[in-house]
Structure formats: C-alpha cells, structure tokens
Length: 155
Figure 1 (cartoon, rainbow, N blue to C red):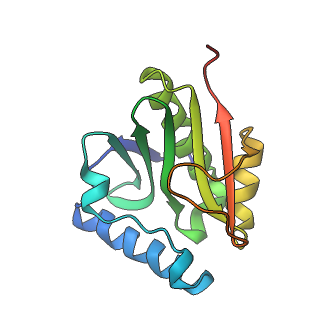
Figure 2: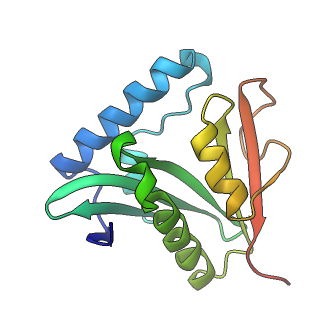
C-alpha cells in the first residue's frame, strides 16, 4: 500500500484522538497501569514535540511523536499503526520520518521505551538499527520495559 501520507499534525484533532484512544486501550490490555507511560495530550502539543499522523485518504491509521529532549536526544513516543494495516510498512515510514526530523534538529540520538509484549514494535526497531540501552530520563529499570537507542549523528 503506497496510498498513505505522513503529515505533521495536531494530536488534538478528533480523528487522531480516536487513534490515540485505541493505542491507550491496546497498552492497557498488555500492561499494568503502573508501567504504562502514557503521555497526556497536552504534553504532545508542546513546542518541543513533533507529532505525525499517517493517513489513508481521510482516515488516520498511524501516529508517532518525536520529543526533543533539550537537544540531547529525541525520544520516540506514541508510535502506533492500526493492527490490520501493520503489514504495509506504515510504522517503518513513520519511524524513518521521525529520524529525518531528529537529524534536521541535530539530535545525535534517538531513544525509546517499549514493552516486552510488543514483538512487532521490537522487530521494527531492531530492523532500523536500535540497540538496547539503560533506562534514560525519568525511566526506571522495569522487567516489562525495554529501552532502545540509535545513534544518528557522530560528534
């Protein structure tokens, strides 16, 4: 499927809100509340966040966010594609687009936290060169969390 577009978007758009609710439910079904690091809608609308939506015609089928962590690294948040469309590499294109933004912002690293029960996500990140790393930012070690990073720019 090549008939999707990725665009910078406002996560408060109603169609995106519906997808974020679907993502939240997906994560709540997989993990206990204390290890669900679900950012607030307002935190996704800050000046240091680039939020992307993947759309097929007018339907939002995927999303992803890049949080610029004070120029030190970019953190990937909310990368999600509706399950029935995952085979079309929409997640891969969202991730590649986030990396392009990070490079344009001169962020040397991309980092993320994901969970042990998301093999599709882990496979995507591994394929794109992400490697295990220790917890970063305010994250703590947790047996249900996996922390990954990828160097984008050499100093």
